[in-house]
Length: 114
Image (tube, rainbow, N blue to C red; front, side, top):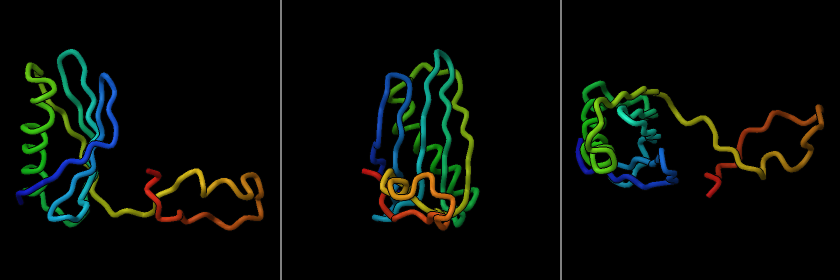
């Protein structure tokens, strides 16, 4: 796999979050956290990615994102979650009937909360 695009969602002094796209399809998300000596990542990807695909993606993340931010790190530890998107929730989902026990279970509105 090649041609990854990383679209930053947010950034703080010690962390960053990116949506990962391949050929205009969203295939995952990476949350990066930087400490004095170790960089940590939580990578969430589609369950269809193979182990080889995940390893290649981690290498690309390290080269293009982590090393440009923290070139002197001692280690890069990545936890990988593979699955499917279930729903996306925003404040709109919880505005009506917030405390009403008779409300049916909310399924999300499909908005990313931009």
